[in-house]
Image 1 (cartoon, rainbow, N blue to C red):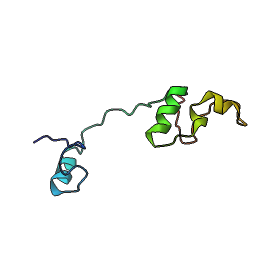
Image 2: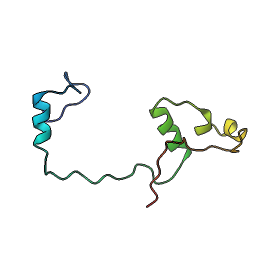
Image 3: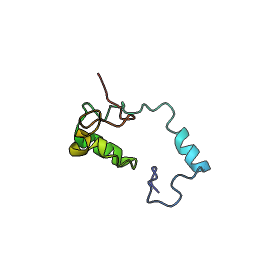
Image 4: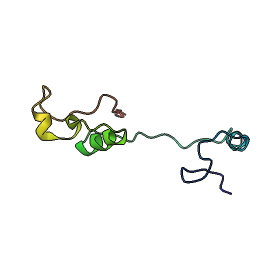
Amino acid sequence: MSDVTSPDQEGYGTLTDEAFERSRRRIGIPERPLTPHNHEVTVDGTRHFAYGYGDANPLWFDPEYAATTRWGGIIAPPNFSLHNG
């Protein structure tokens, strides 16, 4: 049996004694550094981001539609996070 469960495995996302024990074994093991996914705002980036959570607002990816709005062009969704470092 694998140490890691994935969505295609039976019991994925179920809290079990085995799942807690697997988590306890990771105590003290450093995690890989979290790096930001987005370093710059792009049309593709905002489109993929919005589609990822089911938001099909054309303001995030359609230049013709976005040009008719008060912003005059594509903008990122308000929950789009950008790394400024």
